[in-house]
Every structure is written in structure tokens, then in C-alpha cells.
Image (cartoon, rainbow, N blue to C red; front, top):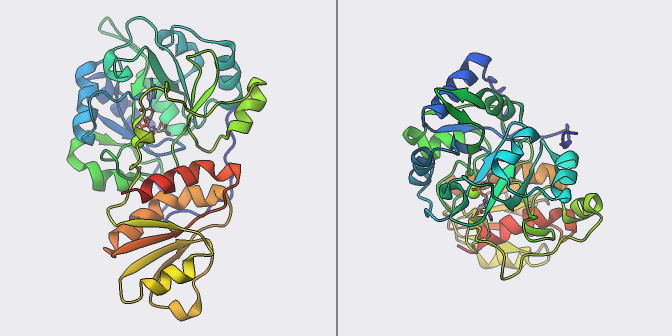
Amino acid sequence: MPFGVPRERRLHSDRVPAIPDSSEIERAAAVLRAGGLVAFPTETVYGLGADASNPAAVAKIFAAKGRPQDHPVIVHLAGIELLPLWAGEIPAGAHQLAAAFWPGPLTLILKRAPGVPDCVTGGQDTVGLRIPGHPVALELLQVFAGEEGGRRFSGVAAPSANKFGRISPTTAEHVRAELGAAVDVVLDGGDCAVGIESTIVDLSRGRAVLLRPGQITPAQIAAVLGAEVDPPDAAAPRISGTLDSHYAPRTPLHLVSAAELPAKLAALRGKRFAVLARAAAPSRLKDVHWHTAPRAVEGYAHELYASLRRLDDLGCDAILVEAPPAAAEWQGVNDRLRRAASN
Ligand code: TXA
Ligand code: MG
């Protein structure tokens, strides 16, 4: 069952994306098989893809992103039948979560299969795996998978298609602006529906551990597993998305509670600043760059990165973000905002 994403969404722009046709996707798959880089839409954020079994191709991802070489990357698959090629142990919980949430915004960390290259695992004994829910991503992965010239193609390594530490792209335009000539093909599949990166659950250590919160909540995962999901501990594997400063705009970002906002605004009088809040702008603040975000979490997450990019581009002295609710379904959004604020 595909993971449902709400249908009613405010789009980043009124632009109607030209969804790539089959020949464009076939060309992109051929570029991947030949060791090139293809940026592609997923339902979470755009990914920067390379053939996961080709270390030279994966090295190009790290070079384009400016990412440290020892960070593992998620391997994207077209279907569950490809899982045993990448995972050495598939616990019952992995089958349950896959059935409930794939294709969708969930990444599973599993013990790696023999032969999985170090370049995608960061030299660890585990591998991150995901079947994404975007139709363009799925078609690309399906066309890519297969045999050619005595070689077997099955997985596409893809981190988010941004420079290391920066905001993940949720439109093809963001990818082109940030990575430009470093990418051989950018497939445009429109705005990413979810808007923040996948939930990451580690199942490699005999229990479920949440490594990165996302749209799929620990409660949803626990309901499927019939067991609690633990927070990360000191033994958790390295994960770049959990660095204190990540997902960050260049402009200093301050996360303030709704109650503190008026005082903070007063303190910043005379400075150029932008505000991202669910509340509407007070009428006396007509000349402030105020962006009103959707009230519900799905819409808020969907627009978050595009809004941060737009506010960052204004070149203000600061971006003030009104802290969203602390409720469980906001955990993914709050996690990204906290890291964006620690620059
Ligand atoms: O939604 C997403 O997950 C997007 C789309 C493109 O699929 N991808 C994404 O990739 O966010 P990236 O590389 O930006 O973040 C993946 C995170 C990284 O923090 C990485 O350290 C972690 O997953 N990761 C990958 N493999 C891992 C492993 N074997 N053990 C622990 N963490 C892992
Ligand atoms: Mg990333």
C-alpha cells in the first residue's frame, strides 16, 4: 500500500511541471548505468542519484555535494524483490514496515548484504534502503534496474541534491541553482509533496531506533511493529542529518516561541529581517518580509524548505521563525528547524 500524502496542497508556485516522458526517463537511466549523476524528484526532497554499485559514480555525488566521504548514503530501490541484494538480514519488522509504508517516505537501516560497497555504507556494517513514492522516481528506478553488458544494476544511491549542510531542494529549480553543471540530468517532477526528508528507522540492532524524524511518526511505526521505537543512543550509527548544524540557510535563523515573538521583533527594530510564522503579520509591521506558513503540519512541511530559500535570498540580517507546536506530528519539522537554527 503506498503511503498516502494529502491531496490538498498549496504549491510552491503556480508553474505546472512538465513531467518527464518515458524517453527522458530512459535517457536518465542510461546516464546512471554509464556512471553519471541524475537528480530526480522523490515525494520527500530531490535526490542526487548514482549507480550504488559503482564506487566511481558514487564518488561524484560526494564531490558535487562537498560531502565528507565517510558519510553513508541511502540506496533507492524500485521494489521489495531487490531488497535481498542489499540487505543481509531482513527482520520481520522490515517486512511489516515495508508493507505498510513503501513506496513512501521511510528509510530502513538494515545489516548489509555481502558485496555492498563501502562507498554507500560509509564502511559500516549496515545500509540505508528506501522505495520512494514519487512516480518519476519509481519509473527511473524500474528502468534502471536490470542487466546489461554482464553487469547487474539494482540500486540508486541518492542523498538530497543540495550542497552539504544546506537546505534540501524541493523543486528542480533549486537543484539547478545549487548544483548546476555538476549534474548530468535533472528530472523535473514538480514540487515534492512531503517536503522534508524521510523518517529513518534502524532495525539492524534487534530493535527499532528512530535516527531521523519525518512525516511518518514513531507512533505510526510502533503501531505497525507492535513495539516501541527508541530514540537514538550513543551507539547509533553516524548520520550527517543529525549534525547539530544542518538544513541551514546562510542567513542566521532564530527559532522563537509565539509568546517571545513580539519582544524579539521589537529588539530587532532597525535591522533587516524576515519572519516565517503561522500567524498573519501584525498590520503595524507592513514593511517586514513576513511569510505566513500553513497552519497544518503537512502544508507547513511541504512549503518549509522553499520558504526558507526564498527568505534566505532576501539577504536579511536574520530570519525569525515562530516555533511550531511541540506535538508529536511536528517532530520532523521541529527537528529541521532546530538544526537550521544552530548555524
Ligand atoms: O528523503 C530522503 O531520505 C532523501 C531522498 C532523496 O530519498 N534522501 C536523503 O539523503 O535525505 P541524505 O543523504 O541527505 O540523508 C540520509 C541520511 C544521512 O544522514 C545518512 O548519514 C543516513 O541517512 N544514512 C544512510 N545510510 C545509513 C546507515 N547505513 N546508517 C546510518 N545512517 C545512514
Ligand atoms: Mg541531506
